[in-house]
Image (tube, rainbow, N blue to C red; front, side, top):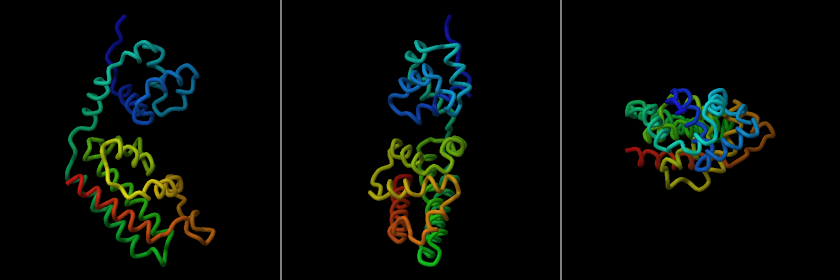
Length: 209
């Protein structure tokens, strides 16, 4: 019996899984299917249904072009106005942070996190990632946004950016950046972080122009 065409929600679940697990995503999904841990994944109901009706042989033979075509369809055409809005707001938050690094470091750090998120999402939209997809699958995860942007071709990044994103991202996702500063010391040099974000946004502007 031939496998039917995939529904859109099934395609979205597979695309999201592929984005999370990279080149060896099929092996990762087969492992989760066999262990039952696919239930812990976003889109788990669709992934489990595909396990039940299609199985491992179908997954192994699934052409990459099937998901690539779906990704292009879901992404649609980048909206230059929306990309520009995200970049303008990223710059605005970065400038606000630069003006408050000394007097309100926690607030400045939060503004820097917002600037990183908006800048990276602007790049991703330009690269073909739909804003709706970003909002659901990236949310406020700076490390995930950075990894996806680099996979999509973003280069020339400040070398200290991954470390900054790794410090900010967990607290930013939980709306707890203030907690990073409660001990009275900054987890990083605020002035250096501000310069890092400025350089990030300059790189993004150049590559989406």
